[in-house]
Image (cartoon, rainbow, N blue to C red; front, top):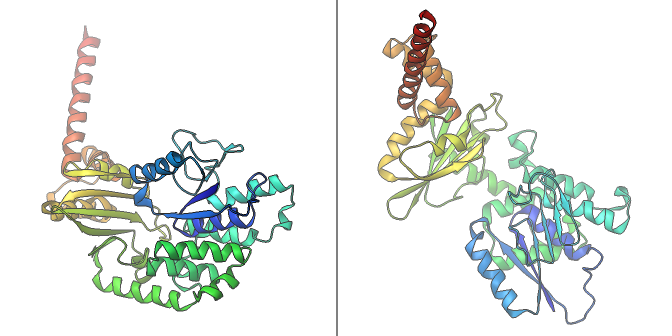
Length: 381
């Protein structure tokens, strides 16, 4: 019986898969000579129907064990390891023989390491990959002290990160990286040496970021890069060359005259993000799909709405400076309660733009006045 090991094709997924092979939990050691581990690197866009189809084909064959790390859950897995929040499992850890789930950890590798220590009854200091897992935590959460770490750190694990960011490896290469890491017992320096992945890729990362900066258009507190394909330029390129930016927008042409838009807040900025990006995009009346999280989100719009979208972002993302400018332009007092309420609606994503926000704020105020009048009349009686 073969084991089919599915893993997310990023640093966390790669390291967790290599750990599973190099340091198996009790009951997962491969004893039979004819037992093989077949690797399946899985990209984020394959979640859902594609992944389910892959799993079904293996279940139908029956003579297979399925293991999934740092990727979508399937009840058919003999072991599932993840740290991403699951609506089904909720906010609390679930640890048993088939599920290693802890949404409080920063990486799937950390979840597996903790289970391994408990399973093998080891002291943490006895495990030789704890420093590596610290680095995986940092990479998976973008927990860099500053943006220069991402573009200038030439440690072996960051060379691997730069390689994945710029080269878009084939499925076979992802498998080879996992196999080499497990073969070298998670010694990343030796593994990268054998793979010839070195500081050249960090330099290439910076060069591609430089190319991105030349296409970047800055609108005060945010930038826009128009791409020919998703991930054409390295992540965070905008912040490397303009650290004071609050937000970065990537616009990519889709088929059928549509635009795929990604927005992220600069977590290294000195200004704290106060705009719920997911809610803001979800509120756009002209979006086809849209949403996300507080600090990052995406949407799809028709290309004809491109300029309208940028106008809305100029209002939504440029903060108090633009709001003040617009108030002065239209003779609106900054302490006007309607304007203050409208400004707050735009910031929190309750309205897609300042015009809609003003209408909503005015309606709320009118309802409030009507109720107050009614209360006064009732009191007069």
